[in-house]
View 1 (tube, rainbow over the protein chains, first blue to last red):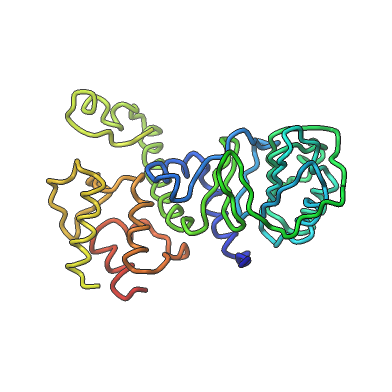
View 2 (view 1 turned 30 degrees about the vertical axis):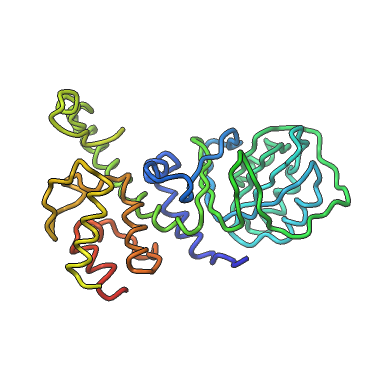
Length: 228
Length: 83
């Protein structure tokens, strides 16, 4: 796997910092999912103020800590760890100790399709963390190691590969194929600029219907100037 | 790629993806965003078209929405010297 440069990761993070998944969604809205963007539902942040952004370092596990520890040992700086528990009854795959070492590795965050624990401690640590479930019962470490980390995973029938990008905030999680990233960043900037222009007009006292050209649209005399 | 050929291919691309603008005359300095020819939803597809045409991935370091405002801007910024 080619390791993505940390400077580039930080650059993308600065674009995302001033916007969010809603704006990214608007930017990719018309693009077919097969091209490389899709939403992962049901995994939420433990702290709604935290955003997550970076290339992915995914690994599968079956309620076993060993693949998680293997991934923890190898994750590059700035990458987001994605633990995918293929067992539907997930025990906690990460807690405060795991996250402490994830911080030591300078990871950009943790996403778990499964369960974690020690939520209050992890929130205090400040590491962006998204999870589907919470469970105080820790997964055990068996001798079922994986042959390689990172590895492809499948979540909600979507294939997620190492170096795919993930963007997340309180609105949800979005996966973006690496080849598609730069185009999406351009689209994001245009969406941001249009939203700023719209918000400025509203702050200056104009009503939304006027700014959008709602009446013209209803009577078939024009297009909506903004999709909101 | 020659400028006129690029303009022709880009205009064809824009009109194919948005039939509502099929009768609009797109000049080289027409503001694509202000005229509603290019909405924010289609910018991503435009960038992918440019990447395919120039056979290069656009660098985010050069990210600048002004560069995609017109046919001439796109040509000058992304195609002319193939940066």
